[in-house]
Image (cartoon, rainbow, N blue to C red; front, side):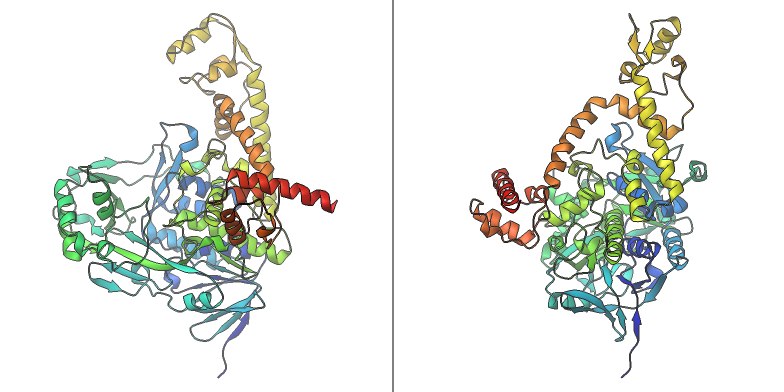
Length: 628
């Protein structure tokens, strides 16, 4: 029986946030690319929370944008509220978050894909990988159609053998009732890929008309909106914003949950998968934080043209009748009507330690992987991995070195390094605390850190690259100038200091020393700086941070220098670490299993001690001398 046989350079499986970034990168880098989805209507769908960004996740979106990805541009065009989180704290933890119009976000991303040259969208379920001599040859769909390719990217999200559960009710579907992908898992296992089950969940969606907002606290967006994308004109995002609302659970809510724990599949044993520790269900919160009398509940709009509201903070897999009792015990939700039940979802994913830092599978050449399929959680983490996987699929076909982002360059580097080197027993979520060099990896300087890499890869054009290089020059020039501007104790200076309740001067001081005072800033001292040039706001922001945190930044740069030293020490591919006699048995086992690409990565593997690293360094030096 004849079947369809088509050829492409790259196949991308899945059109969620990871798949979209991967496919766009591949096509924009010049390759004929096809992206498969179980439903064209589900492209860039947001099946859980209706926002992009947030603590540490905002950093990822900024970095995606700096490398030439699409997520930041898309949310800037489709947000309905925006807020800079943690603005009262230091700049290292400032994170942008925007509420999205879900339908509009998906529609615009689909439109972007549809109008990208060399990119084909195909609604079909991929059921099988075609592999020959350890290299990807193509994929097969449920209909038997064969799509040959030179590289492929798996971005299957939460669809593989997925099932949705609440109470005793089980649907064998993907998120939002979409078709699950039930066949690809077996093909992966046949090719030696290890899979396991993870679980995540989502709260109910409720009817806006049944909410009493008078019993809740209104949460407004920022007066001045900061865009996610460095290419977005700030004037274009100053829009009328919608409000979110804050309420709380209470002892009655918690008692309802406790009485019905035996009916939750999470506790009854029906759920096999491991859930996310840092985004727990309300059942988990009540059990694990029993001393707390209340938990925050955020009521967030799903879009401008729907009355559906998202109940943030109350993810659950309790039965339908218990969900009604539970939600209606919350202030403002006494008469609430549920549009969609809360549910848990289980799915197959991989142990990401089967991947190189390039996100290519170690066992199958040309096969890459990104997103929740890699054991992570969140739209932003998915998009970041999809972008890197797509770039590296293209780099492979170009015969170029892969883009490897290390922990000192980006949150994306931290994310990928954690996934491929550490044991993750639950869906991985990005957090600022995971980044050792977070003062250097701020969301405000993502363009300065990564745009050059995006340019070298080919996703950033010449004009944008030159603009960032000019910005860098202006920052360095002004930071240097401020260090040498002397300020005297004249009347104007004393007046300005008094306005900011800052200690008056008794003698001369440099402008930089004044900027370092907590209550002062570069902009605040503009009136007393006669030689100050006219500079863009983003340049002034960087100058202020560079001066204020100079000592801390220098300290981290010193730490990064030592980190880079170990990262540069490459380890041989497919090396037998049993040859290194002085290594401990556990270290040999772990190193043989993970096959780290450098000494730095080896040092972060659980079970490899500092003493083992010292042994490795000595061994490498001996080998170097022997071969020279």
